[in-house]
Image (cartoon, rainbow, N blue to C red):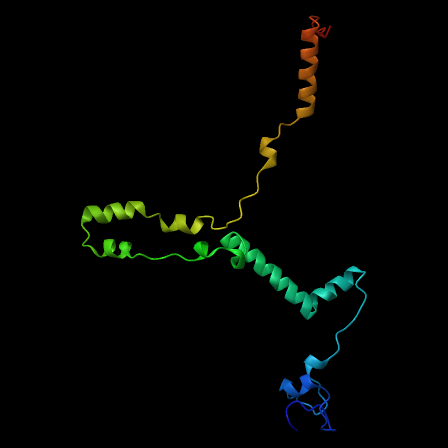
Length: 168
């Protein structure tokens, strides 16, 4: 039996089956590419999960993951970035500078300029800025304090101080 044939008839069912090259272990096996896509309701959560497992859903997930990775690493989509951001012209002056004979003082100064390996590893390389901490700028009981302040201003304007409640 030739590759791409689907059974005893020897007749090719479709053009894709002829091009497939899949040779099943059983004479009645069918190429996985020819199987009909399972259809089901997508108005329930179970249908959504099933859609994510379908090839199209997996393809969309992979695309979105790739976009997120590009945003994290390069600060945006690479395909939309200008050429100046992606490429640079190497003039080679640094190579000449490094090829000069190093003295102890020069070597020490180069080592002081270079950051420690530990610091390089721990450095944040993400192009996406860290989320701002909103709670750091908020004052607890801000509304209550603002109301009290307005009340004191009102009493100060009327020149009548509030009565101090004292315990007796």
